Image 1 (tube, rainbow, N blue to C red):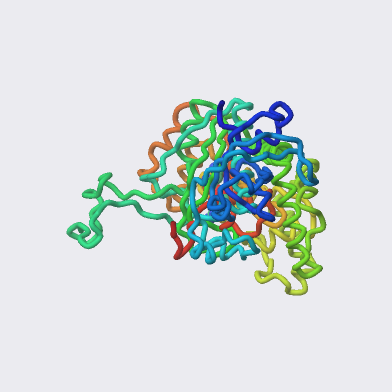
Image 2: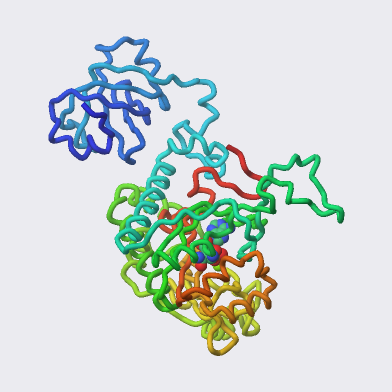
Length: 482
Ligand code: 4AD
Ligand code: MG
């Protein structure tokens, strides 16, 4: 018979009652030398194995401990005890992997509460914990829902390059890619680094966004999206920034800014709705943890809703849409601003919004996800469509409670002349981006797209507070362990 996961057994046990089955997993707990809680990672729920120790070699029983891995053959019966519907009467137990008892003492596999920091130090083991099992199953569901949403809406998945020769997006500091011997870097006569001798014969970097290449694909395929790793060498040690994160970037021919905002809203709601429907057990667990965590916060900072309520409300409510100009008015007239409570006071039109401002709008003023649009051109990228006022561009940011910016996007500048002008104003090398400009020469069309930071969405959905806890092996300044 095909191997069955614990999840399948728990779901379908009625069909296999009184049959012998084989199961595999790790011991989560071994109570009274009689009840093993076995888990194989497929679900947060454990399968109870009943061990009549008189029928087993004592040597085997003695070796069973938290963290050992087992193969068990046993009969499926309806549970006698409370707390589970099914259990397995063990007939044969094989220990697959022993545990190193002394070292186990120092690991997070010891069954007690460990801090998230400690869990991060042992990121290679944290998949085994209930919390990280739940987080990474949800991360999977989010990724799957993203592909499903786009597939259902006739988008094509495009793999844009990870190593790129263009460093013009302006999205952040880039990591260089080279195979030079760093002790002997070839120089030109002027003393500059001679990249013509490097692997690609030019300077190359890790991508900060697949957008520009994505746009070229949308100019033939119509609706595309990218979903890939993204690298930014910003020295931001915050709970919202990673040096390596995953970004999803749809790009749609013939869409304008409003279509783009509609797409972003539908997209986020679809993903959250999918997780609410398909990850009930994990969400219930995360919801309890979230509620517990709120208790340790000062009353003022506590969330008003449970995690699940928060997700349900985001799906149910229409996102508030306000222009940057309106937002600046709201912020500059706010009590917070007048009383000097913002670290960065809001003084004049044209300044970039800080995350404290974004969070004020979302969490205090509107108490809803907010889409800000039409930003001053000087604080946004060169490729955004210049509006008729000549001052703003057709940009949009989606702001979420507890997170701030979760999506950034825009309608693109489709007019060749205007784009060229904007590139020169913003010192973007038009020779380097000749291929990008080409798309505006041959059947240019209005188009729009955005980027979603996968980890920011996963923080929101799981209720975790640090981005390092929603990616298996976080990359942050001074940290690339594992
Ligand atoms: O706003 P950003 O920089 O937009 C772009 O890169 C555009 N090219 C997107 C597009 O229009 N196709 O980044 C998009 C999103 C942000 O809203 C944020 O969620 C996430 O990517 N993000 C990060 N996530 C984690 N760590 C970082 N350092 C991030 N920088 C951006
Ligand atoms: Mg942005």
